Length: 169
Image (cartoon, rainbow, N blue to C red; front, side):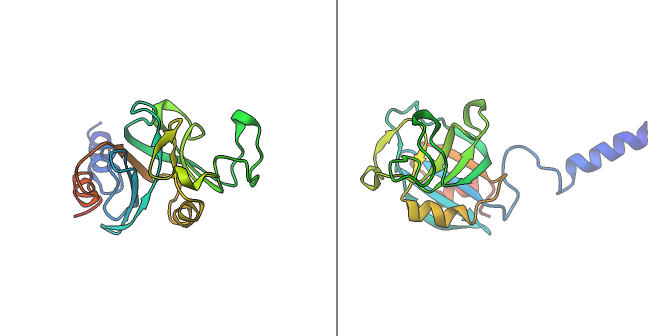
């Protein structure tokens, strides 16, 4: 029994066991700041890019918290209005990076492109985070399944938020 307990403690406190929701040092992290309508991509302990975005029409539509990317899809299908991926009328644009907000499976909330580039920087969505198609296409290549997503309303800089969550040393 003592050996079993020691093995459990070893795994819990080893660097391969994730303690809490924070990413491991060097892992990618996406931070969405609803106050500025921007998304930062942090990797290798630094902010790699900051991209303008659009968020929910009302404060409560885009859930805040710490989430995980669970789905990625090129040319996503828009179920609500039965619009195929790649169709210029598709409001989801060319890429979908879905995350598990509000106990969903990554198919309800996501970071995605848009067919309305003039909406970027505004509070207009039903809860998702919109970006220009070119921006989300670029980001899509660097964001693996399992990437952590932090959604906040904050006056802190992305560097400060990255330090708070262990992504920047």
